[in-house]
Image 1 (cartoon, rainbow, N blue to C red):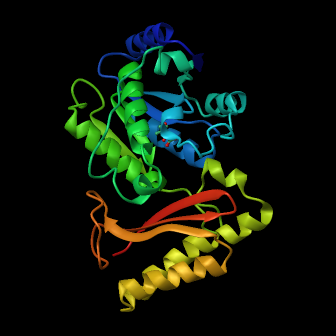
Image 2 (image 1 turned 90 degrees about the vertical axis):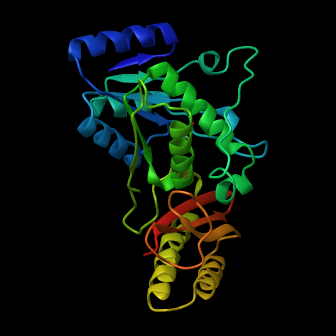
Length: 286
Ligand code: PAF
């Protein structure tokens, strides 16, 4: 695995890898902010299944963090991450220097209307502009044929898919954006780099989040009206030690339009805070 920090060496390395792999080879990109866990390795495995070459990017993107968020505290574990990716058989680790992403005088913003509003977009103004901007830059730098993102950040995936459609990214590159299913701990908690902020007691309480979501989905399947099921979900989370519930809503999987009842393509989305840590999760509500 080559670890590369500057754009020209990246372009040279990718050109060489593509040439050696032969005509028609496909390159997958897995964009990350590092602090890698089993969920990221699942993305890598899926990338390797779908493509001949795999690149992973690691860049903690300041533009997607709000003023009061955890940019400074965000775990930076490049050496450990690089070792994990090498062991996983990744071809290129693109860990750009900050100047390769936001050079002096940088002035461009990518903003995706509609799907960026609501859910995390309401609580984290500017977050999805930051995500769309950096992902477009990473696509332009790496020029992958496909890219993979975790479904835990479902709204992020919807934003990136919308951007890819709107900006015609499929030609000549990035003809597919793949979502990869959430990887969960044994007690159901979705893997996240932010789980490491949880104290042991908070970590144990956090399992109430997926459990309460499953219970709400089961209640609705038994005929409980959605409003009542979501009210129970909120009070269960408060009782389990969550301080704030930012949202607990059902939305259409693609458009993210609000939904009043379960159905095909409807998902339940929850964001809730325990201690200082904000956890998100989503599940289908058939
Ligand atoms: O999901 C993430 O890790 C980040 O939001 C991403 C897509 C790498 C953009 O910084």
